[in-house]
Amino acid sequence: MTLTTRSHTTLLAALDDYALALASVGERFDQGRYIEAQVLAVHVRKLVHDGDTSRALLTEIGLRDVLTWVDTGGVPNPKTASSAACLTLMKVRSGLQRGGEYVPKLALYPPAPIRTRSGEHIDRGSRIPFEHWWTNPVIKDADGAEFSRQHLVLALADDIDDPEARSARAALAASASLGWVLEDGAWSAATPPAASPVLASVRQIGFEVIQTLRQQRDVIQAALN
Image 1 (cartoon, rainbow, N blue to C red):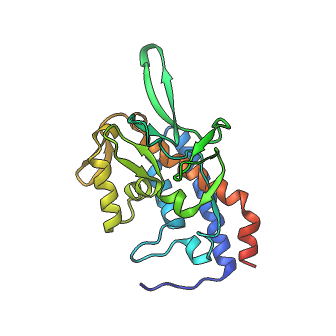
Image 2: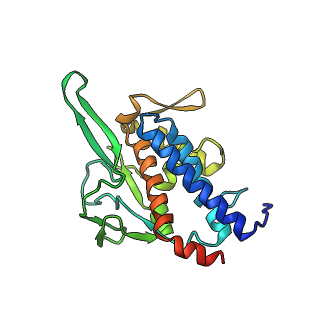
């Protein structure tokens, strides 16, 4: 794997660009452009995921495992058999367009405790180590299959096709209860996009990344001085 070395000034500028891009793409998602979840996934992947032929920007800076990461969802309760989508809320419509749709929590989450992988409870919005944040399950489908932020981001990031991404896409495709199918090599929803928690969860992941970077700006600047 060939990697280039960039100056601290260049790295900080690149990080700022990603943060601005995440915010901009997130706003478009909130306006109903659900396809933007794929763009969000690409940005998050480039920031935090080390692949076979690429290194995450935050790894290059040396901060990915130094920063602690905002967790707004916790993990599903292992003692319950029901499905769970920890990063989203269910919005119920009435009238002619009655039905439910998944929406990202963004900052509208109650100050209630959330479960950690160890079974302990912390305040929602607390920060946790990167490895926990990236690999903790945040969705459990009707069959009990669990999906982490890593699964969701790699499945939707359409700029890569490595074994990890293919595995993540296959896992989502196998989960009928999440409403996803693979058609002609492209991802699409078998039901309306908001009827699946996948896209809204990726939007919430983007929100968590932005909050993580904003809350620890001093740590980032100190590391690059």
